[in-house]
Image 1 (cartoon, rainbow, N blue to C red):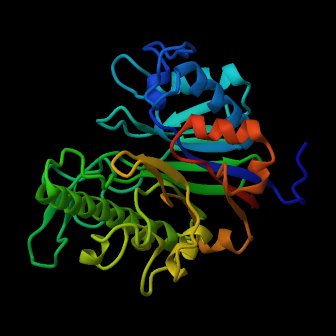
Image 2 (cartoon, one colour; image 1 turned 30 degrees about the vertical axis):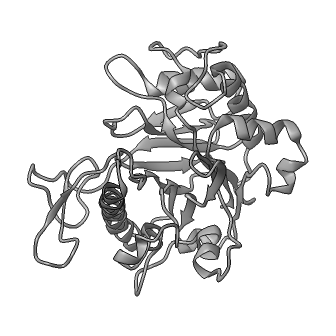
Length: 350
């Protein structure tokens, strides 16, 4: 029995699993074989085994999974994730999703039902077909005058954020928002001019999504909610030269600016205040033209001021930079095989 007089400790994680969908068949069964996965040089069996090691080591009460398996007329995110949890004996064994995306990558929350109750609880009013300003429901369209020129654009989320109402075993209420912001990568660029054009268009879309998200955050903070915003923002302060065109990064928008109530993430704040190249990273990509790896800080867990005051602990499970991971070679190897992103965890006492 839990003691209501003692603090309740929970661990939440955000983890982008590269092409998790490719590891399951249409019935949600694990493809534990020697066929290659969508990860270069890694078989499906190897990637699944690596993910089993990582999720077991995380031992989280809840994991916001970015790029979760697909939901469509033939496939079920929930079935696939719960099959995965059963295979590896995870405490976090129940899954919930929100609005389905048009891609093969969903946002899902895998959690321990003995520690948490989580339900999809979208906020905002559905917008009409011509969109709405402010903070309409995330499966709608936003009307936004992005340039301040009096012309409104229509914005739709590539992957609608997952809004959850979460209650802990001791009755603490939390609001969680899982995020997978628009990628800024200029896919399809055939020359330098197309590269620049697509890069600017993608950054514009990513920033618009972050502005919409921040409008929702403002409403949740004004309501006094204990809020956690977590996921892959495909962005970070100073990550590319096109940020200068818009004056700030999407991460800065979501954290809060000016007189807005701020969210807190020490890794984001470190990146914002560093004057040199020393900054944390949460993702590692192979750049074919340069024949080398590139690292970036893309994954965040941002918390409201009331939760930050409880002095939670943040951790990026980086296989080269985290001493606890380095001490366990099997875990370090698994992190490299499992995904091109590394998990971020938050340990919180309530």
